[in-house]
Image (tube, rainbow, N blue to C red; front, side, top):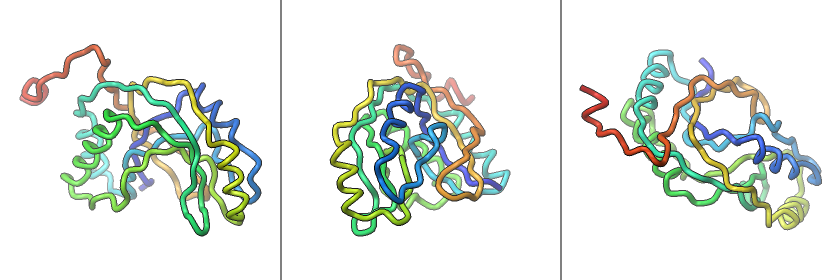
Length: 191
């Protein structure tokens, strides 16, 4: 079974802006533009029945669409950086969506995600990059900012065992409610 995770897609214009951050860092393996995303919850390898239950529960989520910007850059791994990323503005609706997905995963028996949710778009994986080179790369790009974009859906992606992210396959798409639409009370959704 493929590895599953929920994510937000990056629209074309923002992805093009991110692609301009590629290069200038020795030892970096750059993520392909079509594989840019913001991971909401890594699910991992699950059996078909569990995957179907996840899809069924995610399909019931009733949350509003929201706006995001990608802003700034950073790295994971302080003494030995292993990846560089672009940041995401703090958007309460995104955090609420992620928390609901986390609750759903735990209710169906998956262990809690051990990592604190830290929204970002991975730009590159680092194998042999020097800390000084990473620091310089990040300083040069610290003022990165995209135009705001609307997030109107989230996706369930799968990945095969590979090196460095992707290719990802969209397994399911889950729409978010237009911001102007009222929420549908829970008792109307599930008789």
